[in-house]
Length: 331
Image 1 (spheres, helix red, strand yellow):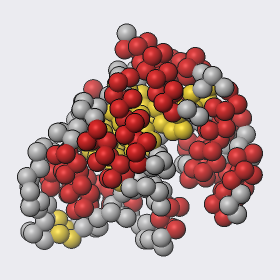
Image 2: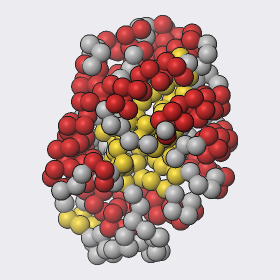
Image 3: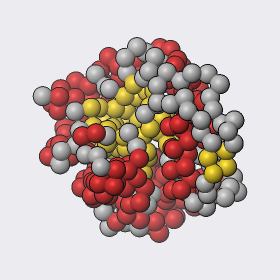
């Protein structure tokens, strides 16, 4: 089984270097950093991490072809793969419509735009001409990298909704399906399998990461408080399919969204996160983590990806997962 860490891009850049080195020492296989709007730049963070590590794979989760042109995504992917000696994985998807609205951007054809971008990026990092005429791309014969990409960079597709989940199986090298709650994997898998059937592949031919949120600490209250922050910030943007697993809806998060994003009252937003909402992730000791991960293992998961907030003491959480969780599932 593979194990990875995922981080939001909201921490000082130098901290990621420390966490990546700890993750490498603890036995993690991959280290992912998001590129959410108005936070720190994932390309900068991952470049620093690449220079400070030796073996752990690194990845973006996710870049989107709306705010970054697919040609620039390909440039970044091939350059960082070169810098990291072939350790880079490109995580890509459409991004959250809510975040695009902040920029007044046209969010039409999100799935088509992502698929067109993947096709073009695959050609570019394969050192091929990427001339294209599609719904979202009109590239001329001058569309090719002016330096040699060391390999076709693996593409992981981020997904929450059924059609995009299906495309993981159809076109991607790997998938980053967000599992809120973790048990949602059972609902995700049939969509991915439909895409695999379209492409004539099997599940063993792609790296499907079960992406969960966790906050690990011996201090239960502190662990829950950290997880509540993430849920308060992102909960309103989650798909109805995810929220339905716990009997929740986007309407349940509207007062929280108003408090955090409009009124700037973060304390009030945290207080409105209910125990039911906290079940979107896992908060507590590694024993609490293992209780729910056993169910994922029973479903045949081959890659567990631990996402933020991870805990009030991130280094301690990394080491705890490395000592208490990874060895159990490696066996």
